[in-house]
Length: 210
Image (cartoon, helix red, strand yellow):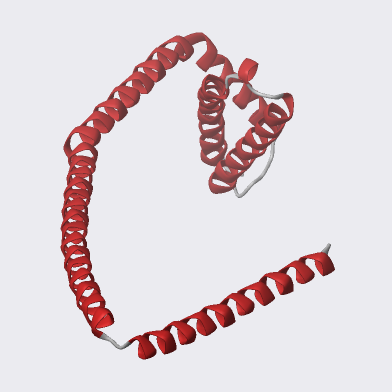
């Protein structure tokens, strides 16, 4: 490995050490350990360390084809220490500003969406539902009105027919009246017998089920 490659390796590992420190602080900021369950924290920590190891090895592979030397670990430690002493406070302040900016932008976007899109569409839907309900109530009232008129006409016609039939009934001979009465009584008796038979059959069927 040439001197230039070694120099690039040292610089890249120092940079990766500083980057690791920044990513670790970012990870700690978003993880919020006290609010998480232990098994979730364990899984997140394991994934974090695996990703960091892969990033460092990939960078090392790009710089010197993946050759590992003792000074690489020293460079990583130096980069991490440099970040902790020089950049950590500035980075954390910048991170908080970015988080607050993103949250503020998200709230503005949410309010804009609610004001310009959601509420107008929701109001329009409510208006359509109100119109449909009003039309439905109007149609129902109209149907009830038509039915009431229709029933009134039927009652009137039946009343007239009943009076006409009574007049005819009075004019009919007594013999014919007696024949009609007998036929009516027989028919009513048959209908009553059929009804009684149906009731008995239902009672038997219920007893069988029980």
